[in-house]
Image (tube, rainbow, N blue to C red; front, side, top):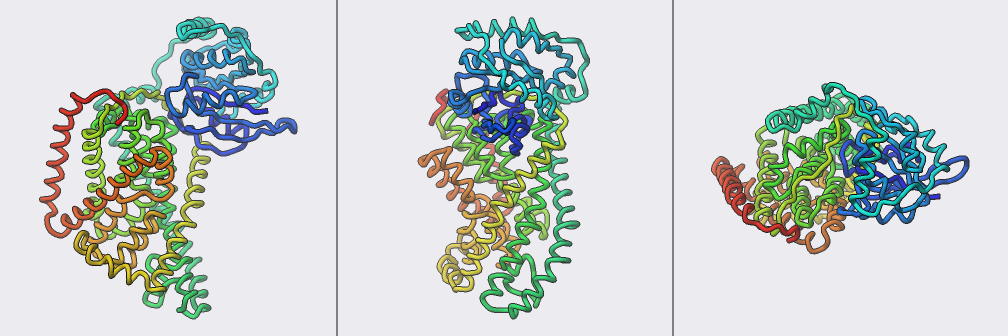
Amino acid sequence: MRVLLVGNPNVGKSVFFSDLTGTLVESSNYPGTTVAYTRGFLNLNGRKIEIIDVPGTYSLEPTRKAEEVAAAMLPQGDVIINVVDATNLERNLYLTLELLELQRPLIVALNLWDEAQHKGLIIDPGQLEEILGVPVVTTAAIRGQGMKQLVSRLHEARTGLAGWQTVDERYAAVGHIVRKVQQVTHRHHTLLETLEDLSVMPLSGLLITAVVLLCAFKAIHFIGEGLIDHVFDPVFEGLYAPLLDKLSVILGGYGFLHHMLIGQLINDKIDFVQSFGLLTTGLYVSLAMVLPYIIAFYAVLGVLEDFGYLPRLAVVLDRLMHRVGLHGYAIIPMILGFGCNVPAALAIGNLESRRQKFIASTLMVIAIPCFSKTAMIVALVGRYGFLYLAHIFLTLFSVWLILGLTLNRQLEGSTPSLLMEIPPYRLPDLKNLSQKLYLRVGLFLKEAIPLVLAGVLVMNLAFYSGVIPIVARALGPLFRFLFGLPGEASIALFLGFVRKDVAFGLLAPLNLSPEQLVTACTILAVYFPCMATFAVLLRGLGVRDMLKSTGLMCLTAVLAGVFSNLAMHRYGMLLWIGVLAVISGLIVFGGRRAKTSGIADEF
């Protein structure tokens, strides 16, 4: 038997899926978390039942890709569990009526039952069951309440009453049902509801945004540094290094195998950053330099997601995002991109038009460094002072803004208004936060460590075989002329396509000056996404748009590298004044163009 979980976005279907199948999936307090279906199995009295988590949809007349997937899945289900948000019965019942018209066995799960009661909503599930003609079960899936009853009544799923033919008839029926089964009692605003209102007001919303982002970055830095200082460095230096010292002695301190596994000894000692062996730098970069910040970032992001702040951030920044040809929802993939570009690229698929997808994808891969990149930039450049770091991130923000303003002006079409459901603030559930952190960190370890080790191995073989000196001599003059970098830095750029943090790690043994490191890190951050992100974007954008985006990445990387080289060595303040002038001109000129642009969605 195949059971489909169907409902509006952000009603808790992913939590149902995890509870029923025991499979861990990500769920967050904003719509659009599930953009493709997920499959798992429930063992019920020895019977294997297939459970499919269908992407959220408001109607069976799809307007987005995720809704098309949902509509296409429905004929494949033997039973439908319609997950309904009990705090918003009126909106959710429209889809319920459409599902009843399919005449397939159906059972309704009134989820968020506890939250509805807290809000003073009194719903009679028995009367609702009688009106709809199908079983109705109350649940609070995040706490596991009602799940046992839902499973025990699964066999009662049946076709219910149907007779609505038009949209108007369905809306009239929804109003009639809600008046029959629901009462709203008077109550005062809670503290969270007051905070919800303040979060989307123009002035207080911006102030709260500034405070939230400042606290988020402080928390990430505090957690990340704490893990490095008190967990990872003591383990590597106190427990792991003595083992490697013994292995180095056994291998004789030199030779091919020593070069591959341990790398070069620095002052007759293993240096986890500079030795560049598989067991030294390869593991240290992944586990002790990048992983602590990955853990910190995803922990903080999970709290913001589950609390429900991200949709409000989208509302507050909607005006800024329209300047670059996007609407406020695009800030969510941009923030996800700071963790990993792959889920960000998937989230961009929720944007409405090809124009928006192209702009968002290009801006994200060029100017939003994932956290492994950020951690490596901080590790390489941070020791030389805040100003060097500020130059890199200000350059990235300037690239994001200038490129976005330019694309918005040059590409035909307009940006649609932000139509996004704003969920209520909810206190995050520790179990859900832990599951998401476990999944995301596990994915990072599964993807990153093999690629980091492969990158280190390739570089070691290249050094050992003498390939790098040949490449360095060939590209040296061009790199010195454009970027002020030695030819050896070109190897890092090539390997950046496999894994960016590997490429950043390759800069460490080159003994670059702080100014050269700034230029090299800027180019690496801008010029190309990693292989996994490229594959996702290629699928979403298609070959033609991906080629356009790739051309922009390469051109922007060259310009950003030349700018950093000149700014760091000769015309620093003068060039930054020029950047401000360009941004100001684009904002004024771009605004005039926007008023006269057409309404076509495609370019």
